[in-house]
Picture 1: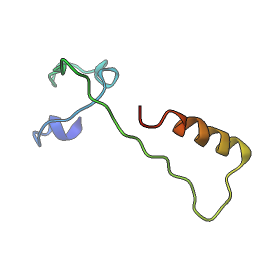
Picture 2: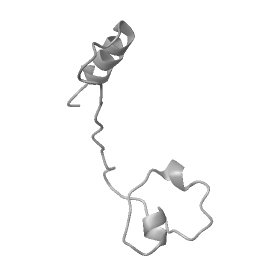
Picture 3: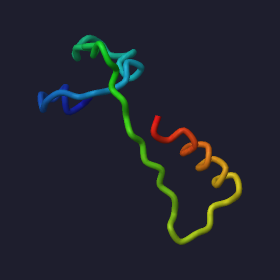
Length: 66
């Protein structure tokens, strides 16, 4: 948002991140289809994950692909 405010281009953010804006930025909704976002999960390579971390990672990738 700061780069857009400085005139460096456009940005894509969630509507929630715009809830406290004072009108300096213009909110434009995309339609008819919403954007989707790919997220990455980073874990330390050298250490073995705990059981809780393993369960969390399993839940995260369980619905991978749609």
